[in-house]
Length: 120
Length: 110
Image (cartoon, rainbow over all chains, first blue to last red):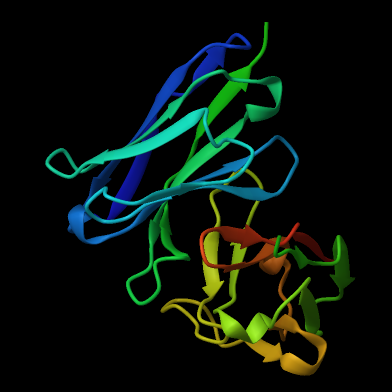
């Protein structure tokens, strides 16, 4: 089955760190760009970061630049998001999403998401 | 920065047709593809339109997408509304280095 499964969310204090994982299965993970998208409670979708297929190129939303790092391990079919210096406004469900084949700047497969809560 | 603006909410009756707009803030919205995602409460988004007007397999032909360069906007039209279409809808595009989402439109089918 083609799917993405996120994990690693939870409760963390402001200023703390967390690493999210996204396990891919059912497709050739190493051929696709991957993205992280987040959604604060009751709010809209916000793009966070993307990484190209071999991990050599990344980009970030201004709101997380310098604090978050996206990476991937193609041998393990896993995408990561290292989140440092977390703030209350980072509280959200974090989705991993696969970039489409023709143009990797949109998404053709989403995970179910993992909730990150930043609170003391 | 490039932004996409959607109406906060729309409502229509079952069987009718509704159109949700998505207006680009600068440049030409036709320069890059626009996608539309449906999100039901408690669920992840799913694609209903990609590359301006293409439907993924499994999405009924009641869903259609279009681009109007004169108004720099994209539109999602849903005809023959069903109660199951009630959801949040997000348009999405991109520029040279980032993905951009519209703020989302809550569709109520009443």
